[in-house]
Length: 190
Image (cartoon, rainbow, N blue to C red; front, side, top):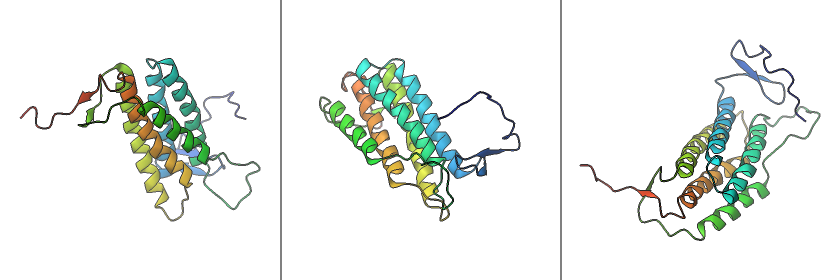
């Protein structure tokens, strides 16, 4: 359980932060950048929830909680040292739930014949912003997984990949199932 009774600790004043296993890393470390960008994605989703319809809002609330799980997963690198607790990891059921919700949202949306520009409704625009930040988080996690001394669970990467898909489909659902999508017109302003 997390207990925060003191917000500032001064332990990061020299540019380092503590991982969940107690290890200190630079605040510019790739792992810290990855889970920080997951947190940024979560904040964007919080913004989208302000104007989301109730069913979509409930999905987004579950995702926000999952993103804290993902942050904990990324903040706890695998180690041979005993931690004294079971580290929180993303599990296949969380990825599967996203797939189920993508399919449900997408069922009533007509196929695209052009790329979609971010916009339409306020909820859709916020969901597009969350999608782009999520894609950045995914790129950072991919980069982190390419570092020989770092390890990332496959489910963590799958979750981010599915989440960006979810956020795209959710933006279309928020745009009255695609009716209010703003479509790209190639070369329109030449």
